[in-house]
Image (cartoon, rainbow, N blue to C red):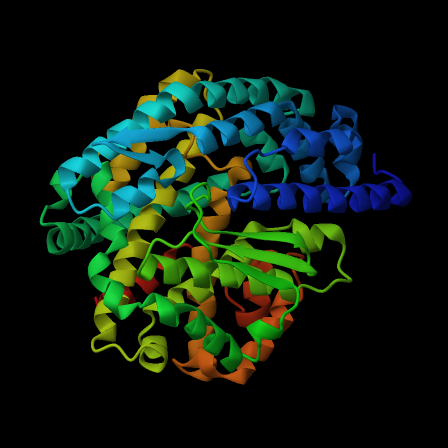
Length: 488
């Protein structure tokens, strides 16, 4: 039964405030400005949104509001676990070779460590802490979710998201095909990259080598830190956006010990207050992180204030991830490099970007296959070796089984990343065809982007792409983009 319009509007208003409060809480904590993540208090202020009865009553509302109500119900049941995990992560420290590091910084420390044996010691310490302190909390939360989801009328989490309209099986088939199609390509290019950067072949690579591989300190001189923000500002200026005059955009680029190394955008008010946060670690990583989060930031900052809450804050996450990817990939785009950094051999950086994309697309394709299986299993413990098996087969190197829980993003967000890569590949091809390889320097491109950004997340990525280009969103387009970058 469809709820009354007044009930839907009231839910929208309260949900909007709930998301604003929760996003601000996440920003303060993960930006390293607040020691605790007080999500429990936020949930208590909006307890009426998270009741089972509310989720059941909203089933006839717009699907995004119904999904939000269901996720709120599940999230409320594990809010204590979210707070506990955040506190443990923030408090944990690791001492390796006489040096003490915050747990959250261990991957960053590994990426900056040239000594391979020390990287291994750092990684083994991180995994021990993960398994001892965090995995037990993850397991408790998983069991609570598995039982609670059945009260929403679905056998499991996977079936629930199919009811929300997630085309999980169709995307899994596309990802399986992509993995098959690019397997030999990754074996060849991955081996070359590991040998050229770390002096080891793909078959000899280990998990503690991966962060170092993509940190690529030898590229630091090509991506100087003092030119990063000016390059972003100049790129946006070409598109007709004056970053400095955007009073609704706030950049948090400072390094703090308890700041998460994972860059993020916190759209506390859409479009009124959007926070862009990165933890600088140096080189190309910082540039990609800044441009990626700038894509999110400009999307949210340009979203029309008149849109309903679900179109401003919810919707298809492949849309905002697509804008993030469009900006991020400029950092290895030859035409952009010639304009902004004037590097000697831009084709080499484009090749490097294509190999990186190949790795991450294969990783996330495997993650989707794993998560679909994970959310249907009756035996969570059995998924620990399956995680290492599925991802190891995709990446052709050993994968830490200890990450079988912490590598899962909620709400099947993995689908947003995967589809965003296809959205970016196909939209980029359209922009180049219409405006040339330097489309990013054209005001017409900026006009189109601002028009599309203003739609928020109302249309899906599939709908946006079809409206603009007439094309169907297809994962195969990512393989084509990668081959172009590789020059093959």
